[in-house]
Length: 308
Image (cartoon, rainbow, N blue to C red; front, side):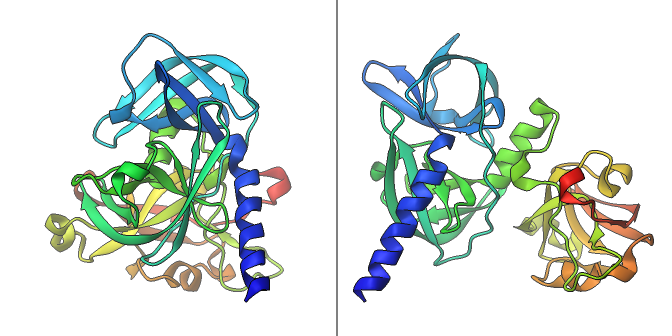
């Protein structure tokens, strides 16, 4: 038991050390700050409802460097806000997590000097929001610093901590963060690209590839009849020049089916995208802005990561 706890403790400490460069402390008033997620380039993402609207901000990065930031796009509907750093900060975006109820979560915040603060919790349940399902944390709202990174045990991003509709602690899903970033940065964060659709068994001819990153999502109740199913996979990133982009797919689309085969099951894509699909054209069924649309996509071979 002692060895098990020691190993668990060491893994949490290692996770914190690895994720600390993603933290920032946004000064929002005397002796007040807000945690933000530093993304590749010059971008910080934080919680909209907690960020006062001012002309400029002072941000403390993980090495305690103070840097100026300008206000960027805000989306009250998603409860997310973007800041632009005056100078780029070298970091690598985290991978996206797909948590389930009972999953362990590490809530990583920043103190006033941008040193990490940590809480351990689990995903208590999911609530339905206007933007889909969002995880609720087994923490009281007053114990959560808004904007904190909510990570799974592998350091993948579940979302950013915020107050839910009833004051509970919840996470703004990482898929929404990806949607917030893409139109503004003009590129897909490395955390969700280039590929998430390998077949179950690699072959000598390579892996079948759609050129998208997908996040499981529940179809809103009012659209289930139209979609013909209760769940799908939201497009959170599209690789430039890849099959999905060439087929006209967009970030925010919900992938429902390929050639009439539902993609909602946990192994559905793996089963469908065998190496024999490479070079073939498939019909893609999507839910877009509440409407079902179809397009044709030619499955490609996954590029070598060293050249992707």
